[in-house]
Amino acid sequence: MKQRFPFAVKLGLSFAIAILVSVALVYFFTATAITNKFATFREQNKQQIAQQVCSLLGEYRTRTGNWIGVNRLLSSQQTVLIGGKLIVRQTFLIPGSFSLANEQGRVFISTEQDQVGTTLSPKQMREGISIEANNKQVGTLLLDNVGTALAPAEEEFLASAKRSALLGGAIAFGLALLLSIFLISQVLSPLRILTRATEQIARGDLTQRVKLKARDEFGQLGESFNRMVKNLRCSEEIRQSMTADIAHELRTPVTIIQGNLEAILDEIYQPTTDTIAPIYEETLHLGRLIDDLRDISLAESKELRLNIEPTDIVSSIGQLVETMSASLDQGPRIHVEANSTIPQVPVDLKRFRQVLVNLLTNALRYTPRQGKIHIQVLRKDQEVEVRVADSGPGISPEEIPHLFERFYRGDRARSRRQGGSGLGLAISKQLIEAHRGRIWAENDPRGGAIFVIRLPLA
Figure 1 (cartoon, rainbow, N blue to C red):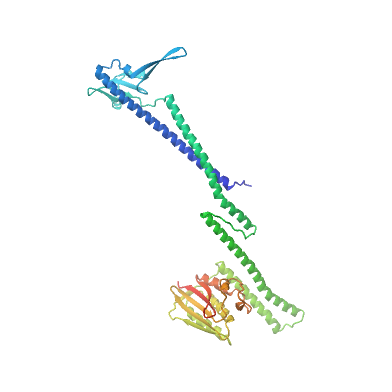
Figure 2 (tube, helix red, strand yellow):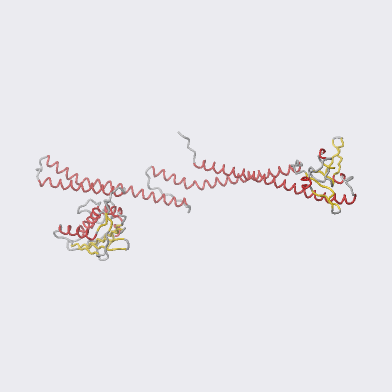
């Protein structure tokens, strides 16, 4: 089994490595910059001193007319007593190595003994510092540009500067590490809350909610999490309710079929047409219920196949109304009102008729015999609107949002006591949405309910 590392450890190590690399790079560039700047300073200081010395040498040559004794001007001797011994130390005005040549370019003084007596090349003459007397070049001072060993004081200065940079980097690393630990704890706090809530939900506790005070992405995540849990709880309640409703809807016809068959088997009833007819009716009811469940399942899973073709829905509605009116001995009157300019609408005619049958059946069920049902077809910009209005008792406002839920039992005035599977409106909603349309219900201020369908023209 692979060892698990907490996310906090991974994040902390990432911060530590990033800070360490950053501090190391800062120290490296700082130390390099100090060294380069100090070398530039030494070179500039050397050049400045050399220029001053050249001025002194020019004055010396003007005053004496030769270079005899000039070594006393360039150097000095110091006698020091160390350990009972006298040590003579010679120092030059010019730091580092140099060579002094006469007007012919012949070196007569140099810190390097092997250079004395040699002649400077034209290139060296150009690189050297000209010494002038009476507006005439009388000599050349050539500085050795090769790195000169640092003096002990200079080495101590550079080492001290680098130590200071290293100490500053260590302090910055410590402060950055402490700050990163604080930030990690702040970042992971909402994640820990979400993790605990998720574990509780995984155990089946859908009452969990998270309270995050942050107004950033974590706050949005907390709000989304709460909405998700609310939807899960709602879905679970719907699932449980739907399971109970399906069991109830199936139990009633199965009980009737079972009871009648047992009565026939026990010879209480004779297998006549009158005793077998109720069994047959209940099997038809079971078949319709199974078909409705299949249709709504296919529609919700987006697997319902539609044969969409341009259709004259006004003509289709008229034919359906004629068929249903002919089957009514006594009942509400159905009136159709439509504009003759309604264009053809791309629909699956079979499914569209199924929706209309559901709506009309529902309207007929709750409309008094002396009432009326009004179907109106309108054009709304790039949509066609079909309105089915009845003169029944209407719908209570608190029930309207739930009308299209499966097996929903609403107001007793519009209950399913008169038959039906309780899936008609839910199937109608799924079928209309499969056509990229909308369906909703509302109350007519004059009385009755109105079901509205909107279908796109394209």
